Length: 269
Image (cartoon, rainbow, N blue to C red; front, side, top):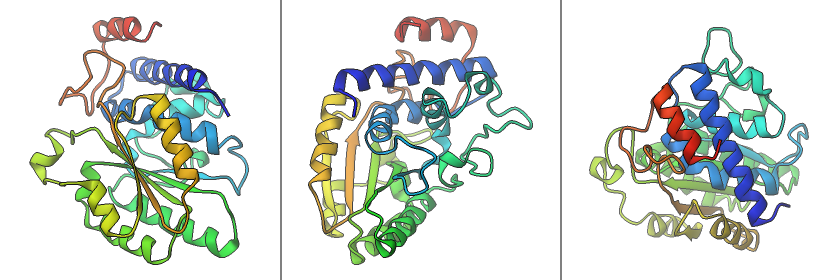
């Protein structure tokens, strides 16, 4: 298990890999939400998912499947995807599609893209593991705008009913949907209160891009039992790249030559 300092270095390296991948491919990718969720995702992989070939491993499901470039970067850092292949992102015939495809990259766990479905399937995985007495966890990364989906709340209700304490929902609360502030679209109110009312354990991370707080949250999560757990983390969309941070236009874009020069300065590349 890596130290906080080591995890910070891994997260920075994965950001470098991600931005170089998008620049080299000359394609559009969902950068804002990938960068906001990077720190927690790196920590979860480091702590719980070391052997990606182990069928009994903990699983990390991207319920918000549009941030798959974040997952590609993490898998590349782990030598599952080659650095050369990253250049083919979203090209015709590539393994690296714009959303997870387990037929091409099995380590992405499931095909996602329609928001709300990933958490539901993750719940099914968690239930199956309970039946089979597999103690490893199922993580599902959800966006805050994804909380607008009705299927999410059906899943939250059912997971609590079955007491799936091996299911962990991570909510990337960066406050921005594809174009507008999340609460301007539909005001979510207090996600903490909502999850608690559905009988979930809840951990709030005030700064979801601070690795010390992330590690503390995961430590606390490991002590919980009897209920599914939600980790609600306040993050910055586009975190790590100055012209993307909290930029409503950073949801989906490409990186041109001028942008990449700034990226290299921001990420010490």
